[in-house]
Length: 170
Image (cartoon, rainbow, N blue to C red; front, side, top):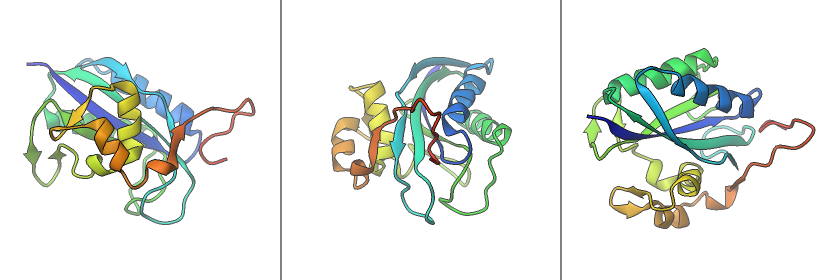
């Protein structure tokens, strides 16, 4: 049975806008995925971790019959294609793709926890999701309510690319 899956994408190294666009294309081109919605891009302050440049973040919704772990494998493959290196937790990265929800499934093992365990607290996920789907819910609560309570909400704004080609690093 096909499930609606929400994925969060973020980047703050290199040409982040192009990286996000390429990652969305890579995900949408997978034969087991149908892209259904794309959020506007947000420019966000880093949350946790070392000092680093601002991020560009977005969420997408896909429909798939892939299993949750197959979706995770796809996300990690797309990260790898975009030169993701895992050296420092919450550190700067070329691309991060997280599985936020997989239908209404609750899942918890050493590889994947669903819904994503910190999504309900992160405005950099919640705001773009809200822009994409004003009626979205997470863990029985509206994404709008969760976004309003997120401690990092003031660090999130819609990304406006400049004519000079600035990226999140600029």
